[in-house]
Each structure stands twice: as structure tokens, then as C-alpha cells.
View 1 (cartoon, rainbow over the protein chains, first blue to last red):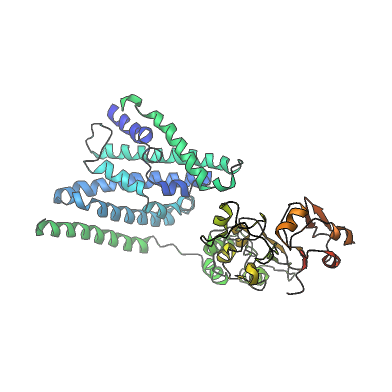
View 2 (cartoon, each protein chain N blue to C red):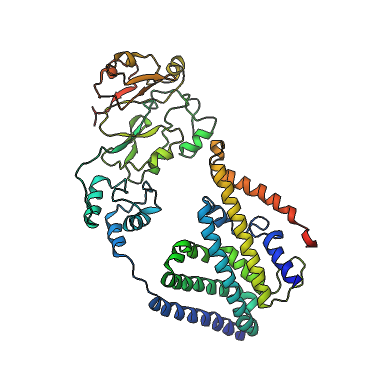
Length: 203
Length: 271
């Protein structure tokens, strides 16, 4: 139990996917203009990432690893699975719940190519990735906990960052710094702030 | 790597591919959702040039907005009154015949390369933003048109060409008032003006008259001759620049005759 908590915390805060590891920056800067869109994006990321990791875990454990081809085939296999999964989920949501589709519909295809999803899936599923020196058994439960941590870390940071950017747009920023330049500087400063979590609980 | 591994790898990946393809094919039939036919019909009417003047992400988004009633039939700025009528007819809406006055983009600078003095020769990328950042631009006038054609490349309707004297010429027959050039211009020279107004101040310089005269033959020197000539109290010199109050201006052109540097221009003449 304690280990699960530590895995979650490490993925969520200490090794935050956006601000510490700089993965998925394209969506981080692309959709963080508005507070509302980031909430839809975050919902979609949490949903897709968790599901993608669970399915990839199955693909690794029951197909790639037994065949002994996982070491070089994991990236294409996972991308294939994630892309098909997102397509499938999109179709189902469109039919079953138009309201939910409106809320996160346009973000689903975007997330197919989101590097954070692939990163979370490979790290939590494939043995051999660096994991903060924690003992890690690669069971389904741990994999899902790790991914939920990563996805929540993504959501919290992107929502916080969108709120910041909304304030920055009405601030007197020099003309040449408006838009992306000031956003990059703000991201860098937030990243420095997140470095403060290093060493929490001895991780 | 032996043959066995290659076969295993292709089988594994091919298997996943086939399985996923099959599931998606079945799902696309099972979970098929009918699309609103209105969206497609409206989409075909729209110009399809994705200028973004309506505020939607492209014509596709605008078509959905109009079909769902989030936008009115007049949402498409580029399409103008004609398109609004067609969409209105498609949606069986009541459309009045009253046609509003359209906005057109106007270059508010008359200082062509033979009129204005240069600080240096700009030899970089033909982009106004870049030239502007290089020591404040190659012109001695810090308000004037750089003539490098950022508006030309921004115009989705190919209505702007660089004319003689290095100034962009905006063809009002092709201009659909989308405002892309207005945002593209780093000096804010281009503005949307009412189509039926004929007199405009083709200068943006707020410098003192003496300084303007030193760098440009066509600039506004704030002499106030136009202010005195105007019978309708429609033109005033504010911060060393003549500004027309278009609410009061009747396009009588008295000020145009009095302007010593001819920065006040009757654009109706060459329309």
C-alpha cells in the first residue's frame, strides 16, 4: 500500500511529466490558452492514458513478452494499440453519450499522438525504464496507479498553467514577448518551482 | 536475429493490426452516427478558404456553428451579404434585403520608396515583423509602411499585391474584410474602413510636422489646414495627426484640396 502511494506521488508531483520531464509539451502549449479547454483536455488525457496503459499491459504480458519480441517491437505495437483504442472509444462515446463527446470529443484524436500517453504506457508496462529507484513489480495495479499519477500530474499542471496564461494575456507584456515567448518563460519558472518537490518522502 | 524472431515479430504486429482493424470496422457499423446534412450543405456554400474572420476554427467549424444555431447566417464575413442570403434560404430563415455597407482594408500610408528616407538597406527575409525588429526598421519614419509584403502573404483572397513605389495595393473588389492583413501588419497601418467613405488620411505618423517633413514627402505635418477647411467639424488634428470622424464626414473633399502634402486622399477617384 505504501509503495503504491509512493509510486503515485512520484508520478504525480516529483517526476511531473510536463514540468520536470518535459514530455507532451506540444499539447501543453497548444491548448493551454483557455481554462475551459484544458479541463476537457485533462479529462480526456486521464481517461485515455489509464485505458491505454491497461491495454498495453495486456499486450506486453500476454503477447510481446512471451514471444520474446517485446524489446524492439514495443513502440510500434503500443502506438498501434493506442491509436485503435482511441478511435474505438471515440466511436462509442459519439454513439452512447453525445454530451460527453461534445465535452472531450475534439481532444480524443489529439491525444492519439500525444507522446505522454506512449511514455506513460511504456514506463509502466515495459521493465527496464528508470523509475526513481523504487521497487516496482510491473503488476497491473501498479501500472494503473503509475499512469493515473502521470495523468493527474498532467491535468493539474496544465489547468494551473492555463489559469496563469489567462492572467498573462491581460498583463502589460512587451509586444515581442506576447504569446508563446512569455508562456515558455512562465513554464520554465513553474518548472523551477516544481523542482522543490524533489526529495519529498525520500524519493 | 534469426528467422524465427522475424516471423514472430511480423505475426505479433500483423495480428494486432488485423484484430484492431476488424474491431474498428465492426465498430464503425455498430456505432454509426448520422451526421447533420445541414452542416455539409452549409459547408459547400462557404468560401472554404479558412480565413478565420468569423471566429470559428475554419469553415468546417463555422458550418457546424451555423447549423446548430450558435452563429447567425451572417457569420461569414468574407461571404458578405450574398452568402448570408443563400444560407438564410437554405435554413428557411427570414432574410431582409437590406445590404449593409461592407468594410474594406485600407493601407493608411502614402510613403512609397521614392517618398520616404531610409535609415539603412534591409537585405533580410522579406517579412515586415523581422525588419521592424532590426533597429526599428529600415525607414526613417517609424510609422510608415515597410513594403515587405507581410500583408500580401497573409491575405487568403490574394487581394493584395505590392504595387509601384513598393507599397501594397489592396484590390477592393477582392477584399472580403477578413482582417488578416490588419493583424499581419506589425505597424498597424492597415485598417478596415467603411466602403462608402471616400476621404482618408493616408498617414499614421504622430511625429512633429518638422520631423515628418524631414523623412517623408507624403506625411501628415499637422498643419491643421484640413481642420479649417472642413465645414462639418469632421476632421481634427490629434497628437500631430489628422483624424477623420467618419460619423460626420460627408466625403465633400474640401480638405483634400487644402492638404499641402496630399496625405489626405480621395480614394473614390481611382476606385
